[in-house]
Image (cartoon, rainbow, N blue to C red; front, side, top):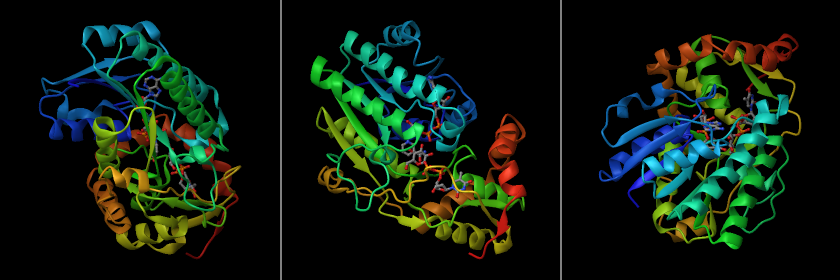
Length: 343
Ligand code: NAD
Ligand code: DAU
């Protein structure tokens, strides 16, 4: 494996993965293939832009001809697919692009992997495919996705498995938990709350704030994908979690304390429809491959907060664009009818 196609590589985790892989594998060439939706941003990759091992192709994973061209032109050995519509709240507002990219796009990439006889197709999936769980999910547990986003991701996973079983495409899947770190679009809760707090704007906490997520630092996520890509068993799925299950109120408290902001910034707003109370993963399978998360919850969060505090140039530009319209649609009415909450 020498030439990788990283789809969605201009997004949050994908761009961190590209940086990580160049450091770990100086002999690899990486082509980022990305549509540059609202969430894709070439500034996330500015530090590798002039690297001779790096190339960028602007393209849609649903466009079979463009995918084939990229595979042929760059002699690709393996695809790592990060490309997706990734935000649950947007999937509640409009699920159309989620089905196209997360389901049809995955199918197009699998077809191309089959046609070109690639060494590996790796799918980046999510712990959300298991749905709301009351105990850590095993890779063999049923998929019970509950949001349009999660249902589209689960459909992608099922298609990956079908191409392994039916066509012998050498696939692997990682199902990651809530990831934090540099370059995450400020619609997700941590960058949203950190950047709002830095601007003394309200932090819209959904419902009672007692929903539980398992927080994972982005470089730990990248290391796990690397390990599965190189040492994972073909046809298998691996959970990747941070072992940091926390309620949202605990996340908010750390953000406020770290930035020395008053608790009255937090506003209780109408809950997310169908809001899953808890995601949690059993990590035994990936542990057996020799991986474990390196970042504690506090480290993951404080490193992330520090990055946003030091890189206002990156997120202020985003918050001036398309984001404003989305923010008004998502939070305008919610915030106008919100109430103060003690955290
Ligand atoms: P992101 O939204 O930051 O980035 C997604 C990238 O995909 C963007 O660069 C976007 O331009 C690109 N893209 C979207 N549609 C495309 C298309 N049709 N063709 C080509 N490119 C397209 O997402 P992220 O948070 O970095 O997530 C990456 C992957 O990891 C996704 O598959 C997501 O489901 C999964 N995941 C994310 C998390 C998390 O906490 N962020 C956790 C587990 C799994
Ligand atoms: O679990 C993995 C998933 O994590 C990924 O597959 C998704 O791509 C990623 O977006 C993330 O999904 P979540 O829905 O868990 O993340 P989000 O940051 O949107 O929300 C985290 C928690 O914070 C959730 O319980 C909802 C809550 N929240 C979120 C927002 C945006 C709020 O209370 N207020 C908010 O404004």
